[in-house]
Image (cartoon, rainbow, N blue to C red):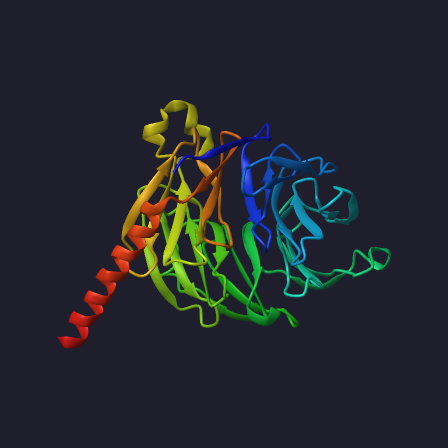
Length: 342
């Protein structure tokens, strides 16, 4: 699996997102400039200039017409994907951290950090079809969460919002009333900051990564813990394969300690685990700093990683990856057969 190295950012990567068709890859970094790349060959297509702070996350509309970004400059911005034109800027009293379009792209959920005297919030914004009708008003504001909210995503049919962050607790909220519906169990859940969250392609389950050196798989509706993947390093990024029973984890030591060790000791590799059996099935090395972002292409044939080193690495899977999948499926069938027979 020979990677394509994509160098377009001057500072560490923070987030990666493919569009629905899988032909475009959007990257965010601390250098203020979100970038879009061709997902097959890694060529840079363009940049989105207008932020004055680190850009933490982004999302792209279903038709790939609009991009939304959340930044430390206390704004979330709407962009026209094809031209790079800034369409609208949502302004806040604190840095914007996480952003995601709802199904239908008529709503967006945005989180803001605890900053000065301002508490962290989850805010829902209406996204106007005609940009001339766009307003800054929030349809819903959720407060009461202690610590930074690193991720907020929509649940099935836009009925719920799922949040996770510094307090190591996952919460499910009613997206219309803001009522807290469920929260993760403190004993079986994460013990340190949840750094990342990614949903399965059918939204039935999601995975979280934490600084407690584990990733966990959860049921989206019931918040039941399904699986736990244990590793030897803090987890900064996670994703679920849309076509295979595979999850990928990435991370490494804190950025402040990177210069105190070498690449090997820092364990800067993306590790793959079988989603059901929880066994590690392989790893991909290459980054010269912790991995901060991971994303599978929607077609399941490739994945991308973004690191503290400022590089995006695009990996097209070779036949070995799919052979491993077949081997584990055979083992799973044998295991279930012996379990039923017993």
